[in-house]
Amino acid sequence: MIPITEPMLGSEEAEAAAAVVRSGWLSQGAEVAAFEARFAELVGASHACAVSNCTVALHVALLAAGVEPGAEVITVSHSFIATANVIRQTGAVPVFVDIDPDTYNIDPDGVAAAITSRTRAILCVHQMGMPCDLGRILPIARVHGLKVIEDAACAIGSEIHVDGAWVRIGAPLGDVACFSFHPRKVLTTGEGGMLTTRHPEWDRLFRLWRQHGMSIPDTVRHNSARVLFENYLMTGFNYRMTDMQAAIGRQQLQRLAEIIERRRTLAASYNEMLSSLEQVQPPAEPEWCRSNWQGYCVRLAPSLDQTAIMQSMLDEGIATRRGIMCAHLEPAYANHELRFPLPESERARNESILLPLYPQMTNAMQEQVVTALVYAAEKSR
Ligand SMILES: *Cc1c(COP(=O)(O)O)cnc(C)c1O
Image (cartoon, rainbow, N blue to C red; front, side, top):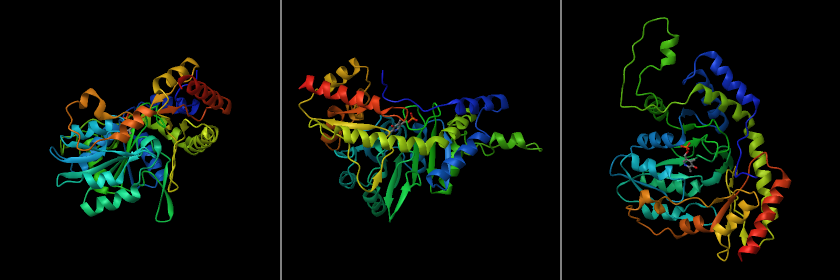
């Protein structure tokens, strides 16, 4: 059986977690601080704040951007549902715009057309690790005074070319970027998230919100020789990461370069193997970006039956996934009023599939995937 993905974990991660258990300090502490520092350094951010997962990272990012009940946030429906849900959780309205069919990312023309007097922010997604077109989105945001929140859940290690240089996603180019360490992503801590921002005052807010609005972190009280009392400065949350997760994360960061290189090699060889197939179109990578290939999505010719292809491959022992979901097609959004039709989002969901891609995959396994896909396409025709 070839799964859709497999986290790359070794005895280093197991040892790091065990050392935290032995230390006696399990909640957010020194390991979280060290993980944040290394993460910030790797992506070139001035501030990085670790939280429980990317969904809550997006939540506090929206709060910092001043997104309030009644406000509008421009985003895509074509994303994991958390992207739209967090907007609703602030009481604001997600305004869905369509995607560019080649990159599966938000269409900058759609963003410009969706701006109203209530728009507060743009929540753009680097879908499947492919950077979205910030080169066109940021100037639009600037003109209209909008905040830009990057959903970088899948995009650790991806790069974008701006002003003549390659920049890692998370630097961040917008106001804030939010990452996920769920096992389905490129690096994992089991569950986990990270916020990187250019604004020191936002970073301060994130640290307060994640810890109940507490003025003095418990690590400081623990290490103090004097009696200290904390205050609660605002209505906060418990969005903390544990030191066990952070210790695993630090080991995962050590593997980042190797993981990205291997994923890029595998994506290139998929591209090559699929180039001769007429009914299957490999993903496009614009020249101004370098994906980490968190997801490798191929588009099927309309003559092919998506479910039949997936079933046939599963019968051959190969897991695939349907193209990225659309929030507006889910029951939770049945009453959501669409401002724009989303034909490309729906087409991408219904006419594409994700193929297995993870660093431990061998070339032979990749050949098995392609053989099964070719066989499935022949049967499905
Ligand atoms: C996975 C994912 C999320 C949610 O991340 P969690 O860490 O599981 O909360 C949000 N947005 C996108 C685009 C994702 O792929």
